[in-house]
Image (cartoon, rainbow, N blue to C red):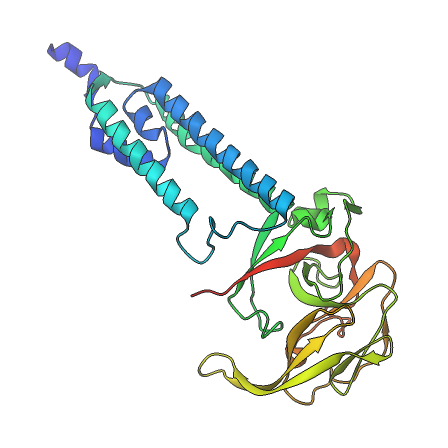
Length: 326
């Protein structure tokens, strides 16, 4: 090759092309000036991501279950393994493909825009798909406080089913101001549901509590016992237990509480507190009454300045899965 021809070309290193493939399918090929192949690989990346996302959404919506065998929020999962295998196979293929021609014509600075497009477009499509799934199917939350102990502990992750109560403007939070009021495909909550919602006094914060009062119910705490429509809720004492991490442990009486519809769960009683005896709360139409399972450590519907009655439109979804970090 003449010196003039060499001046108009540059050397392509296959190992660099292979490494760039891990940054994004198609980036390594674009570096090697295999533009058409790079575009097709990027299209494949987008198409496979969209197909996987739509398949996941269809499965969740039809079965109302989360495919735990394939997704593990606590660590490495089958889906992660498939992604790694695809990236490794693609990188090896790119290395072999690029090695066949390691001298290519030089390109101007405009080609940098191509790198950006090959890397950014699939990323933006994936992000848009993830947001769409979050708004319509499953939304993950991390529990920041112990108000729902022992059911939910600090640091636990929960998956909230967005379809459970239908969709309102808070389904797309933090963009709720862009949507109209009202609820589409509404389904009323059941007593005992653990729900995530935005309370009227603090509409910018997500809360998670258990729904114990339905529209028209009369709710009152008497001596630390939940009363619904004048009748105490059945509960069985399980004795005193120790909770919390080392250095922040506390003792609490544990009760198994059973609501009138048969939903059963554990609650904690840390002793006498100002929330053990309350006024009678009459739940308005279109609203719900929610409480934390750690009764003396929960600012909930018993505290109107914090939560109060929860409008139906402010419900985000029902907690369907709980994951404890390992």
